[in-house]
Length: 241
Image 1: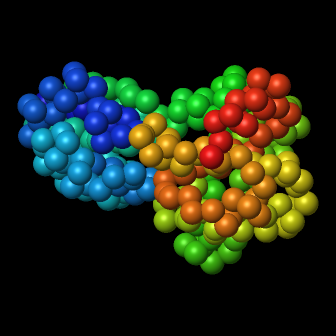
Image 2 (image 1 turned 120 degrees about the vertical axis):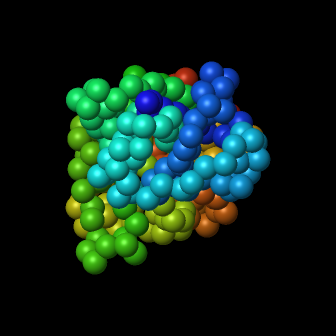
């Protein structure tokens, strides 16, 4: 039958009209729920879309067992943001192609685009980094600092995607500790964008110390700015909380 990979966008009502029509015809609908702190409850999403779905574990995506169902049924996988932001998802499409499983991809907005509302110019961003939650690790991974170092060396901004369950105070603490440990200097001020793409969106531009004291709800991401163009600087000052 068919496998549908559908981006939900950044808010509970951001799904595209054509994707919503397809969902009404599906035999099974799954939601990937392990990579992001959703800005709404799953119940709110079901109510908004007027559908019922099952939460899908990471293993079912990585072992591609979801594609076995798609051989005989219409199966949809809902992904927060855009459908192909994560490398795991393109692997599903490659497997569909190899196994001759019909598929269709529905794109949507993502954090990669929404960060433009900070005023920073998208073409000036370098590699995107991921910050793990140290509470989930026996050591304290600092590899994300290498991305910051490389990006700063070419005057590029760094988007840092924070791990699920990682609050702002701990995220800032991990950033500062990693900076000291790796001896990689950070700019005086950094950026946080919370609930990007929703009505609750807020942009913060301040020192790490001041940001760690603020009540910044999840989901959020950090941005380490490089040298700012005067328009970027003006935008941040005007748009920040």
